Length: 73
Image 1 (cartoon, rainbow, N blue to C red):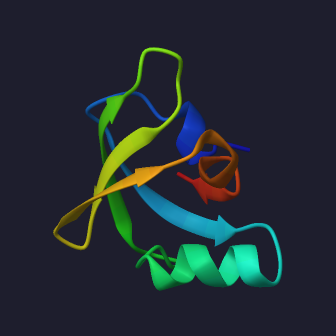
Image 2: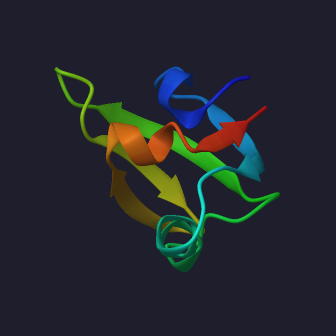
């Protein structure tokens, strides 16, 4: 399973599935990350947390734990 956390810098990936449940999953969806959306990985901080991405035309920073819940292809 590929997750957003393992996506290389500079790549564009497509969301296949969101893992997690309840409020955590709802928060990720409220940020615009839903099934089928394309995400461009802009930067990763030196220690890997946070990850900066572009989704639906805006920049977003995600924690490693949240990025692990986003399955991509």
